[in-house]
Image (cartoon, rainbow, N blue to C red; front, side):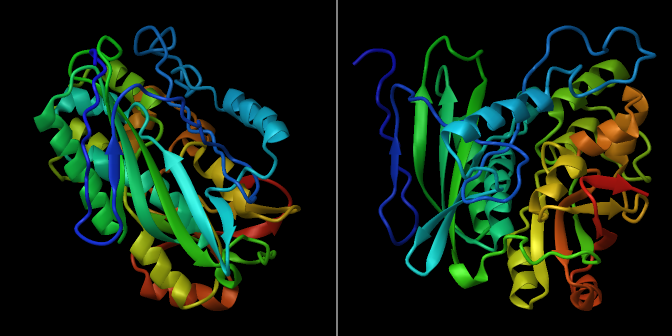
Length: 386
């Protein structure tokens, strides 16, 4: 059968529907991503390129940028613009497919170059949580409850013990989001990846009643923006974060500087698993008042929050209204990164933004602690920082 042998690794969930895991010659996959207004389909930029060269742009005095680290968000935006000509309707955080009286909501993503740090730190048992989080956090922005998840694990030579750790994290992530790991694929592709390295992709599907879908259409000027805290960098911006690490001269086992007296290594801080917001967000939605949600991933506040607004509306964000984790302060200081670049690259301590009515804001803040009132909806376009 040759080197690319079928592995037939079937992962069956504990109950219910049959699941499938296949393996063999990899097939082309969709590259889904990008900041666009809400639509029936989804595509957002989540580029995770590795640039060439050393840790600094040219001299240590220069401020570092995401583009300088090899990631060009604008190029990704242009690609999606062209794709929309071929596949109209894409653009939301999740793709909506009508099915009876409900929508099936689908999302797909990876974890970018955070994988590089997983290889370097040897922390493989939480990267699967990141993988699940990136997709289920996207589809919950429509009010969808995740139903099932599938994964794709590719490597040059299958290390069963390592792969088991990765899948354990995926199972943990599914449990946190109340969905089933329905199946996936394991591809063993000799000579394609470096020894000990692998790649991951994930796919989530959920459902929401058509009369309960959250699409941002009812957002008006004066609505309140509430931020839910992140655990740290989550799974975006690592091409830049790794360049900052190179410039810092620290190792992954060194203590993170300026960490509020908490002993955490640089590696542990950067590898903190992405928060899965599903249970918290669905609980908040069930009590009313939520008009829109934005998952803060690639593009940060600047590109993601406007995606949920009707035309003619923008956001005023009050910087300093939430706690920024020390890891971001360290990244900005060492990398000499401009504020605007930080806010378009990282989540800055807020991983999910809710757009809620004025009447519901105080109740949601009280019931959802910790949560932050970070701004409001204004007339205009884009995000304005105050």
